[in-house]
Structures are given as structure tokens and as C-alpha cells.
Length: 93
Length: 470
Image (cartoon, rainbow over all chains, first blue to last red; front, top):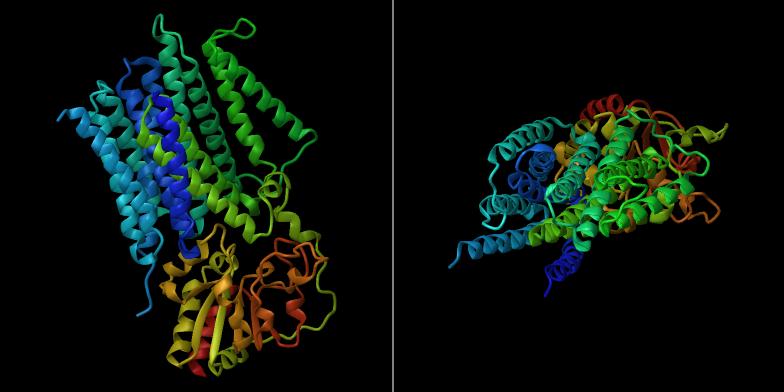
């Protein structure tokens, strides 16, 4: 099977899984969920690493480095700020 | 076992952790660990990519430079951001994520152009085009949304004649240029790379044009939608480099963003199309409205309000964004603590759009140490109002406006908290001025409603003092 078809299977099944998993999150957690999901979209860092690491310098490398930096801001900032928020949620005792 | 197989198994582990991590987000008790699992999944995916034999990472310096700069900037921003500014923060992070996907597409396009004698296949052309288009729209759109939320750009809808026609023309040009590039052709004798930069510029312009006509009050919906786009952009980048973890995680975020966007629209009783094209919700909406005229209003001072609250057996607080702007949530918590010590049954009613993004008010109250199990959403608490002695509304307006039940009203059908059904209502507010919807609120003139005029923080401090002395 062509690689792109396997990719499409992964895409469609992940979308369905995402809807199932996320549909049950209580409203209380919607902001952390949005910011956590946002951090996961920083997965573009994988693509950035691949293009930067495989480059032989020049424009490709520059574009790649900027991509790595931007995606890292998204990943590190996103997970940290989500953790900071979730750490504040406490139950009544 | 081959090393490649090991790396692929690491990717699979990462995928499992992403899904499980998101699932743990279903409960406040496990959510923090869920976020940690997702972060671990990211780390595993990054390490697996760095050592992946198929990708042949040779240039380490560039990756290191990018990661160090990105980590520092991200960590500083995450530690210093104020909780009230969360929507802006998510907006910026989101823009960076989309920007990264667009740059991956650009780098891959340039690489293919530079490689001698290797024409770009149709498959690569389509995936690169999609990744660039969605990534660039997310990037520029997110920064416009950030500007609107932080007041750097006007919060009013920016509209001009033929705006939708222009957007449609740009979109058609993008499809044309993208199509030409994908089949390896040229347009007007321009070299493919020049054509690609035109494609990039038009995508960025489209992102700006799609967001500027939307009012500041609707920005959280836009951020949520752009969040979904940034996931799709990452997924498209996954197709570009043929990486399934990237495709999977991007699709998960795409679904999450879309679900939250729908939810927010439902809470405002509007369709996604209405938010995107309605040019609604500007800051100036309130000024159009008529005031209360000379209808009689009952008002109450700190001592009066304190007595009502202290001798009630049940109290529900309805916090609005005005509370957070005034930074009065800590003083509110003090008042409620004193009431609880007196044996009053205290609950908080949270409207889905109480803050500036769904669940924002919950975060702001959590910051003030209000336990999350005292917080109830609209469906859970609306039946309790008729049995409640006193409702304290702080800095909220449209979400408690009974006009929503009037089919002729502009806010007809908007889900509201039925506070007018309680025995007594105290509304803490600066004036009788209308909210975002720009209409008068009949609740303010009802016989069992008492207005407590003033700044939320100052009023709440006075109330805390008065309640202590009752």
C-alpha cells in the first residue's frame, strides 16, 4: 500500500479517536485542554528537525532553524503553561 | 531486531502516550499527569526522530540553536504570563506552531528545487501546498487574533466593500498557483520558487483577511478554530515528510480544536458561519444601546449585601469576566470562605462563555484557590436557582439576561443562567450599562434584584469586611 494511503488511514482514525477522547472533557478543563492540545500541535518540530538535520546549509537550513525555534516555543511554552494551570486545580477537602 | 524497528516502536509508544494523555484530561484529578504524558510523548518522538536512520540527521548545530532559543522563549513566556492573558498566550503559541509547519513546507520545496534532476511529484506538490497554506493562514491569523485580544489592533470588526469577493479571489488564485506548482508547470514565465513565494504571501494575506472582520469578543472562538488549523497544518507537514506520528498528533489537535470551537458557538447560540462572517461582537456594540431610562432600581451597599448573604442558607455566585479584569477573585474567595464558616451552602455557577475562552473562568477561580468541585456549569445548576436564597452576580451581564427567553430579542435563545428565578439577586457592577450584546437587562429592574454599584475589587473588599462584622 502506498505510504500516502497509510498516512490517510492514520489521519482519519486519529481524528475519530480525538473526537471520542475530547468529547468527554468537562467544561472546567476546556482552557487547559485547548492549551495542552496547542502544545501537541508543536509536533511540527519533528518535521522541522528532519528538514534542518538533512540540509546541507543555505536557505533550507535557515528556514529549518527558524521552524525548529518556533515549534520549540510552541511545545515548551504550551506544556509548561498547561502544567501551571492544572497545578492550581484543587478539590475541596 | 533492527535499529529502525526500535525507532518505529518508539514512535508507536509516543502515539499511545498522546492519546492516553489527552484521555487523562477528562478529570481534574488526572489532568496534570495527562499533560505530563503528552509532554513525554513529545520528548520520545523528538529523540526518535534525532536518531532515526531514515532521516540521516547530519546538521546538529542548527537544530540545537533553534531548540535552545525556542525553549528559553517558551519557558519565560509560560512562567510569566498572567492567567487573564491566557487566550493571547495560546494565540501566540498557536501562531508559532502554524508558522513552523509552513516553514517545513517551504524548506522542503526549496530542497526539491535545488536537487538537480528530481522533479517534484504530484503527491509532494499537494502536501507541501496544503502544509504551507494552512500553516501560513494559522500564523498570520493567530497574530491578528493576538493583536485584537491584547488591544494592539482595534477589537472592532474591520470590514470594507467586496471583502468576501477579495477573499474568494485570493483563494481561487491559491488553488490555481498551487495546482500549477504541483504539476511542475509555470505561470507567466516565473520560476517555480518565485511562484512559491507568491503562494506564501497570498496565504499569509488570507489569514489576516479572514480574521480582521471578526469582532474582539469572538476572538476566543477564532483562536480555538486556528488551534484546529495548526493541528491540520502539522498533519499536512507529516504527509510532506512521510511521518505517521506527525500525522496522528496533528489530527488529534485538529479534532480537539474543532470540537471546542463548536462548543463555544453553541454556548453563544451562533453558528460557526455567523462568527466567521457576521462581523459581530465589536467593542463599540455597547454604545449603541439605550440605558435604563428612569425605571426604578433597588440598590444596596456593602452592609446590606453582607446581611443578605450572611443570613442566607444557600448562595450561588455568578462570576463574569469583569471579576477577573478587576482582579477581585481573591477577595471573592475571602467572602465565600466566611460564608461557608457560617454554614452557608456556597456554589459557583459558570457560564460556558464566562471568561474569554471556554473554561477560562475555572482557571481564574482555581488561581484564587476556589476548589473545582464547587464550580457548576449551566446544565448542572440551572434547576437550583429557584431554591436559592441569594445569587451574587459579579461583573456578568448578558449571560444572566432574561431577555434571552424573549423570542423577539437579539439574544433570543442564548443559553443563560436563570438567576432571576432565585429569591434574591445582588448584582455587583459599575453601572447599568449593557454588555457586549448591547441591550438593556430587565433583571436590573426586578423587585427582588439589588444593584451593588462600584468597582468589583473595591466592592468585594468592602463586602468581605462587612460580612466579617455581621
